[in-house]
Structure formats: C-alpha cells, structure tokens
Image (tube, rainbow, N blue to C red; front, top):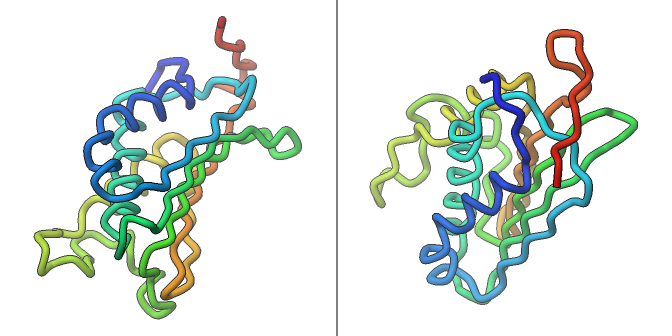
Length: 164
C-alpha cells in the first residue's frame, strides 16, 4: 500500500489481462485514458484486482455483443481525486438489489457460478486506498461503477507526479 501508482497503467494492465473476455463479450469496448493524472498511493496489484472485477462484471452483464462497455479515467482538480468509470449497456440492476451488491456472498449470478465476492472484495480494496466505490443502474439499460480515489496527500506530504 506504499507504491506510487499510475491509474492508467493499472487500467492498461487489467484490459490486457481481460482482452480475450472483452473481445468475446462486446464489439463496442472503449477506453479513454485521462491526461496528466497524478499518481495515488497504494498497491498496483490490489487495485488491478478492482479493475478486473469491474470490467469482468460489465462483460458478464451484456446480453448481446453489440452492447457496449465504456471505461475512463479522469482527475477532478476541485475534489483532488481520481475517478475511474466503468459503464456497461447490460441488463442493469434492480433498485432494490443495488444497495446489496457489495455485500459478501450476495450474487445475482449463482446459476452461472458467481459466489458474490468480487464486488465485496473490490469495495474493501477501494476503501483501503481511502476511496469510495459507487454504483448507479438503470434496469434494462446498464450499470455504471465509479471509483473515487483521493490523491492530494500521502501521510501529509504532497504526491509527486509520475515521470513520463
């Protein structure tokens, strides 16, 4: 949890690891990498697990390959936070289930082998990084997952930009 981590590098790695699943799931996968993102303090591999879980869930939510997945990174200067967004055009999540999706062992995919730990683990990792994980969903139209990570200080010291 003490590395200087480049959000875009983590996203590139996760997309590379999931490239086969992505190609099998959708013909419309878009990634927008934010420019000049400051690093965040944390653990590359643990945060990569979060991105893998979110993208994997988005792939599994799609009913047809013509439905899209849109991933982006950005920095919000006024809030001093990084934002990672994973949006899918999948089946969506009913409003009554949305508050429970990060509960351990809660799954809507038990029939297809889901055990309900991916989002629970992801939420815990994001929290360990000082961030928040939020979901919005519109049944029949898709779901958006947003990760907000603070980047302004590390133990009271400003973070240094990652050399390019």
